[in-house]
Length: 333
Image 1 (tube, rainbow, N blue to C red):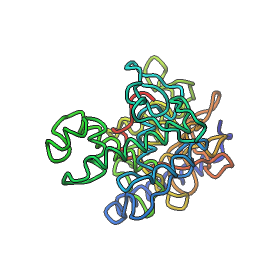
Image 2 (spheres, rainbow, N blue to C red):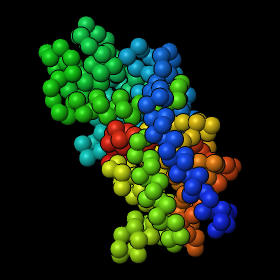
Image 3 (cartoon, one colour):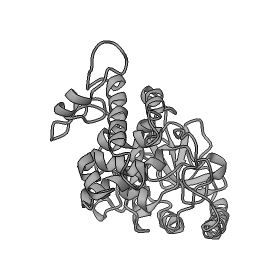
Image 4 (cartoon, rainbow, N blue to C red):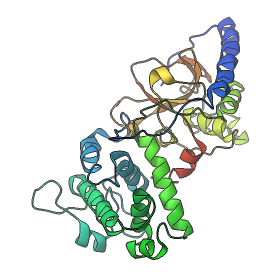
């Protein structure tokens, strides 16, 4: 839920001019900012992994050189959305989605309680890391990137990676490797500024055109809904107008790219709000940052799409949407 109107009509008019100046700045700096993950130990973005699993992911994600905590987090998110009770149609089980035969061979007693429990993240997360590293060791003499070869072995089997001297020419496997390595960026704490999205201005322009539209829970702006939106419906439509397909709900939109710090926000960044600042899966609201400490958002029932301040106690963080990041998100977690 967001607060009531905070800008007068005159301020809104002035704000639009200010916004457009800032949007121009997106393009000015687009070629000048460094992005991605730097060298050395990889930290996790704040709240990207639910607090109950952060220590496990950080510890076991450093089990071998081909793995890192953000990569392990990306795998867990892609497999189960961090749901320890997940079961797939193929009978894969738990937060790491082990099938029973693989668990019988590769499951480990991560917490030392004398049991190997696929439903217990304290066993399943260490087992996922251990299995990754076993595969990395098996294909260690194969040319190319060790992490990509490890992921390819996880998807297609180590023998296929050895046979082809790297990532096999299978569409599914190459997509799996790209998906996980792209999602990795949304779980890593950036060590440099991240590149601004070139679609940001289009998204902001779309959202500006919806100012004053009444909120509708579940709204996606369809004619049947009178062109109304809820918070994530608005952000989805705004980036859709720029050719980027975001998932429907806010807590999945959080993983559509890397996470700039508060003092690094640029117009077009998605900004998120939660009552639990340790868990991105608990995010309940999203808006589009426009500069000057304000966003455009669809706040709540009875309100309209409007400008709101972002510096509130429930501010969780931000995402700089990237096309690859959005494409990498699973369709259901």
